[in-house]
Image (cartoon, rainbow, N blue to C red; front, side, top):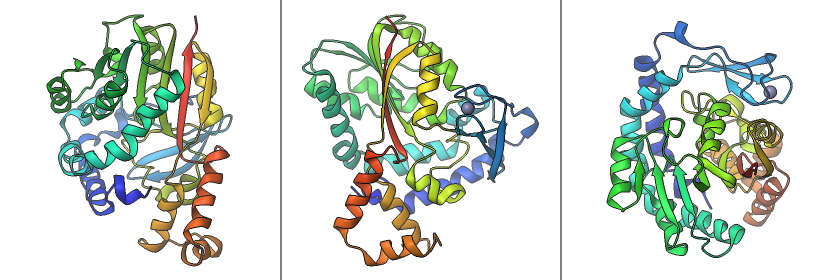
Length: 328
Ligand SMILES: [Zn+2]
């Protein structure tokens, strides 16, 4: 898979420009930002790493989680996600044109993964947190037609699209859902965790929506991933105000354990790390040193895909997947 398939570089850059403008509108009052402890292990000890677009990133001295600190409040972030022009562009300009490509490259494989993991249709109640256009749920419904699906989606526009696809809809952030207490067999949150104001509270709230023994499947960014480590503050994944939390395999396990989840399985099945780095070397002329430049320009596709496999197998991809079970 290539970055270009699921994220057109040019459109993505335009989106990032809009985000910069929105930051000036929505996050002017920095004195309202809240200082937090490490979102993973609650340690108050952190090291300052860098500043990006006026947001400070620090890393926890204990568990190495990279996070924005101080950060905008939950309410300020919610306002931004609901009202900002960049969010509108994300929905209409960025996502819609690649939606079908994403169905094939991302959502179908995710649905297949769930069948591999949990077997034939168990007729579960399943919630997709941040369901977007409902594409993933459509794919899962095709292979598990007897299960019931709830799209949890705070954006009005996208919630309406999910409704048209005849999913049950909760037009709210997951933290505010109060129906379905203790009823879900499986909750899913793809690429959401990095956005959250308080990941611990999020896990506690959604934990309360799960049945005892119910499952949580999430994907998020790994701050110890290959492209993020190499590109660091220049990484497009490090994009405030969206991406506030960069957990790692160890720190996310810690947090899950402290929020009533057991048996967290963490893997990094990412496929894009090398492609992102190569793109930054070739298109953005970024200097990452002699060795990676040599690999980018002189080695063949087999070498590069073996490198990517090695990255994924060793928990070094920046795309991390977690399955955890709620305590019985
Ligand atoms: Zn920590």
